[in-house]
Image (tube, rainbow, N blue to C red; front, top):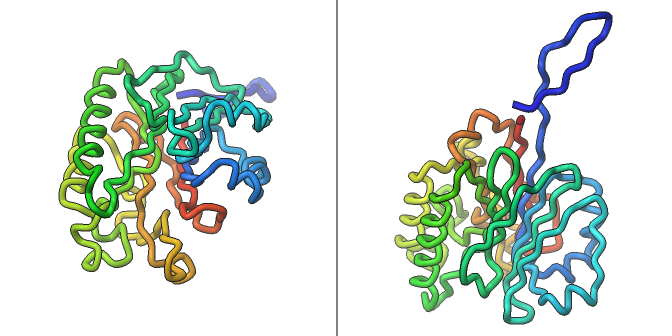
Amino acid sequence: MLVSKTSVGGSTPPARAVFMKILSWNVNGLRAIMRKGFLDYLRYQSPNILALQEIKISDSAKNQEKFNFSGYQEFWNSAQKPGYSGTLTLIKNNIKIKSIVNFPQDQEGRIIILELEKFYLANVYFPNARENFSRLDFKIKFGDKLLKYLSKLDKPVLVLGDFNVAHQEIDLARPKENEGKHGFTKEERSWMTKFLEQGFVDSFRYLHPKKQKYSWWTYRGLSRERNVGWRIDYICLPQELKPNLESAFIDNNSFGSDHCPVGISLGL
């Protein structure tokens, strides 16, 4: 555990945990969210780590935009297809990155894996199975490939991002109406169960076992205003970090996307 110690009058106070604030947000277009005050949000929240999904910007377009996330290291993974998918991880300059892990054959820019001092951080944008289930098999295979890859890493892995699945009935406002639909199929929910059984902890559900709160709302039918949503964004800890979890939250007072940020505080 990292500690901060000072000496006053010859005495040493008890060790004090250093808290790390980690956020994840599917922004549904980085350029769009920038026009809606994203930099103000970043300065106000000042997270140690912010993982973004669905940035929807190519490498060439990114270079033209000349983004300036002051105080942060930037790690980008844009999709080969312009305006589609993509991930970005922002990490404060004072956090040492030991290595960047190249996940093989990620043409859709869905994964960024970074090695930090105590753990690996995996920012993941899982595929959407689609209404006609045309990408359901692809999604399950993607998840299995990722899980197999993570199991080979040499230290604990923290996985966060848009999983595109509501795991349990408590995780969406209308489970009976949506049973079997994409994002709430038996296959997707079973995969999420398998993922958690591999040693991961759903941080929000661990601290709030009965709380109904959502991170995504369709744009149709004033769903967000009526809070008819789904919880499909997760921060999942390795078992080794579960004792360090101080808080887990869903920030549904932040707007600009059809998703809202989710976050945790870790005492390290």
